[in-house]
Image 1 (cartoon, helix red, strand yellow):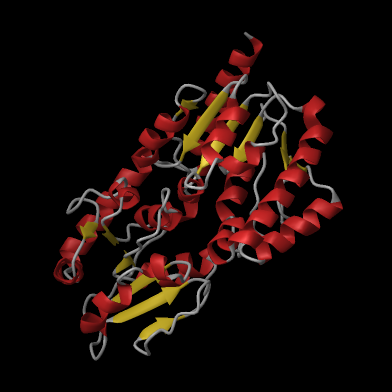
Image 2 (tube, rainbow, N blue to C red):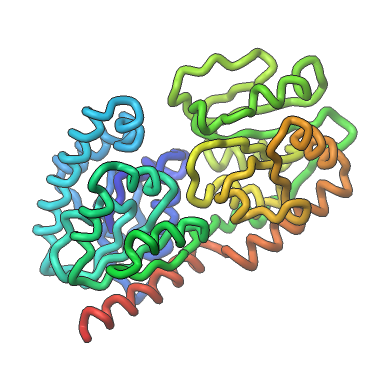
Length: 368
């Protein structure tokens, strides 16, 4: 398994889903997993595949924000980092080629130097869809996919159609939703509906990720007893007004134990291309209602008025806030969200099972 982000521990937000996935795969008795990723705590059953030099370079790459961030801020530097990544991967693949039955790549670009004929499963996130807009990238990926069994696995249904259009004749495309840590399903909310309502935003701080949040929220939160609490790393310099309570990054444990139980809901007004936002799945598993912007990734999770709300105007946003300040409405929406995500997504062990089914299919195709 290959990934360019991985958390140092369970309190680190960066690449945490990779940790959960590798832990779930490592718990299985029918797999032997080697992970090529930045350094961090690993499950006992998961071995490391990096040399010390590769590990140091990956740690530095992640600390700098990763290749996607570099490409957004400096196209030349991002391109240089991408070339270095491919060089490191080529050496790693050659070093392990004789030991592998299958390669699981997180992000499309990491499969480019994969050994010929080796089956490949590629996990695709929303950032990959931006990558595919780069000149020649679809052609390079199609070249890398030819002559081998390939499964392209977006983590949300909305990505299937564009991926099939680009790669449908050289790979299969099948959605595989990520899992959710069981702790979120166990969370018990303790909301005081007689006190000022408390709303959470959990996001990397970029202008696209925040979207219309400040503009639409100001009339509702400034000079009002409502509270807006914002969590996440500052990845672009953004001046936040004083009425926004900015806390910086928070660990999953802090959110689960301190913030989610007392909140009225989660807000995301992102304009950024998303896959299937993990924080939204965790909020739904916790029974926390969500108010989200009208993005395909959000509509993929939320049935408006049933298990959450979608809005596309300040007036609609205001109406959603006011509706969820009603205790009965809030609890009804939250319960529906938890029931949907439990039945449709499940835990990380459920996710690992979905991947293993595809691993077996790809290996059977390679052996045929």
